[in-house]
Image (tube, rainbow, N blue to C red; front, side, top):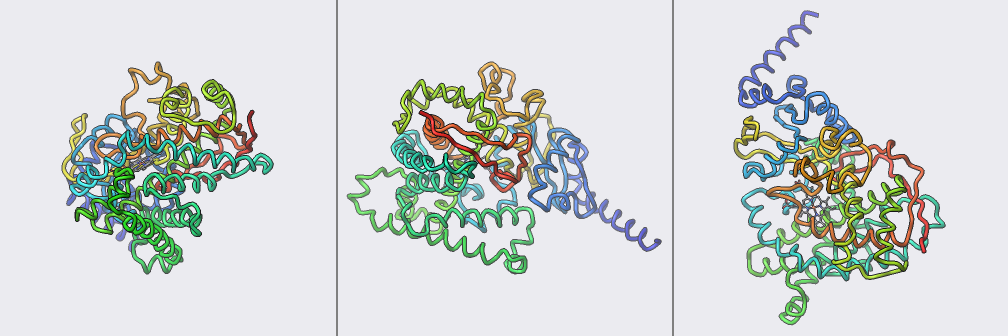
Length: 490
Ligand code: HEM
C-alpha cells in the first residue's frame, strides 16, 4: 500500500514538474477549460479507438464549453467549435500548417496539397489553382452529365433488389468522373478499376488508425498487427495506377495534343510543371493521389447522404422533386447546364443542410507555427495542435437552435441564415487561408448528379435518423450504412 502511494506521489510530482516546464502551455489550460487527463497520458487513453473520437469530443465540449484545451500524452491540443475561434484559426498565417496527425496522410498518399507544409504549400496552391477555375469547371459539365446518364441506367436495375447499399456504386461512379476531370482520361474499362476504390479505402483505414495510434507509423508494428500486407498492396496498386495515367499523358503530350486539349486540366497543369522543372515526378504523383482521393470519396459520400436523408424525411424529398420536375418536366436523361444548377434553390438548401448534419470531413487539424492571439485576447502558443470540430459546431444548439440535431433544409432559408449566424458557423469545405480547392467543383457536380437521380427515382428507407452512429475516418463514416429502396419515377 505504501509503495503504491509512493508511486502515485512520484508520478504526481513528475506531472507537476512536466506542466511547470511547459508553463506557457499550462497557462493556456488556465484560460481555456478542458479535461487535463492523467499524468503522462493526458486524454490519450480515451481517444485510442476511432469509433470513440467524435463521441468523446462531444462529451468534452458539452461539459467544458465550445473551445477546450487538453493533452494527448505530452502534446497540448485545443478543440475548437466556436465560430469566432474557428475563424481566428483558419484566417491566421500562424495556422496554415496541418496538425501532426496528417503525417499519416503523407505516409499513405504522399505529400500533396492536403498535407504539405508552408511555404511549399502556398507555392503548390498557386500553381494548382488554375485547374479549379470557373472556366475549367464549366468544361466538366458534359462529363458530369454523360456519366450520370450511365449511372441512371445502372439504377434502373435496382428497384427489384429491395433495400440496397448504394455507396459502392456511387464511389465507383465518382471515381470514373474524377479520373476524367482531373487526370483527363476515362479509365473505367481498365481491368483493375474497381479494385482502385477498394485500395483507397484500405489505405484510408490504416491512415486513420495511424492518426490516432502513432506507433503504427513503424512498419514492424503494422506487420505485427496484421495491417502492413494490405496497406502496402493498396499503396502500391494506387501508385501503379497513377503512374500509368501520368505516363500515358506524358506520351500523348505532343505539341498538337496540347493545343487541342484544355491546358488547365489538373494532370496537364502538373505535367507541364514537371516539364518546366518546377515539379518532380513524385510531386506529380503525390498531388494526383491526393486530389483523386479528395474528389471521389467526398463527392460520393455527399450524394449518398443527401439521398439517405431525403429517404428518411420524405416531406423534403417531395419538395425538392417538385422543384426539379418544374425545371425538367420529362423523366429520363436530360442535360443539366450551369444556369440550371443556379435555379435549383431548394436543392441548394437540402445539400447544405445535409452537409451541416453530416459534414463529409467532420474534423480538421492545424498546428500553430507562431503565437496565435484569438479575438478574445487569449494567446495559443506556438506548437499547439488544434482540432476544429466541424461536426459539433454544425450541430450546436446555441448556433442552430433547439432542433440543431435533426435534418431540416429550412435552416438555410435566407431569414434563418441571414444576419445573426456567424460566417464560420457552417464550413463543410472549411474557409479562410487553406480551404478546399475543389469546393466549386463539388457544388456543381453534386447538383448535376442529384438533379438526375432525384428526378428519375424516389428513395425510401426503414432506417431511422436517430439510429445513425458516426465514426471519424478522415471522412465521416456510418457504423451501419442504411440501405435504400429505390423506385422509378415517371
Ligand atoms: C462535397 C465535397 C467536398 C468536401 C465536403 C470537401 C471538404 C474539404 C475540407 C473540409 C478540406 C480541408 C481539410 C483540412 O483543412 O484539413 C478540403 C481540402 C481539400 N480538398 Fe476538398 N472537399 C470536397 C470536394 C473536393 C473535390 C471535388 C476536390 C478536387 C477536385 C477536393 C480537393 C481538396 C484538396 C486538394 C484539399 C486540400 C487543399 C489545401 O490544403 O490547399 N475536394 N476539402
